[in-house]
Image (cartoon, rainbow, N blue to C red; front, side, top):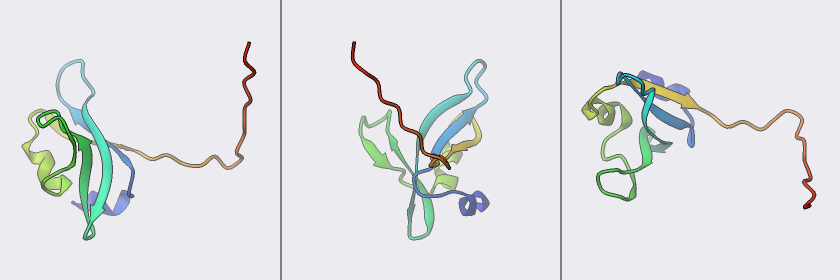
Length: 88
C-alpha cells in the first residue's frame, strides 16, 4: 500500500512471478477510486475487462506465485519527432 503514492492513473502494472522462466504473469493499468489503487485488467477467470474487486495491495495477496509488481509509465518525449512513411 505504501507504493500507491508513487503510481499514477494509467501506469502499466505487471505482476512479477517466481515461476521459473516467466518474469511476468499478468498485467493491467493503475486505476484510482476514492484515492485507493485498483487494477484495471482483462480477467482470465471471467473473460472480461474489469476493475479488481479489492485494492491492489489486497488483490495481489491472493495471486499464487506473485512476488511483487513492476511498473511502467508512458511519457511524452522532450522533443517530439515525427516520421512519415511513404507507401511503396
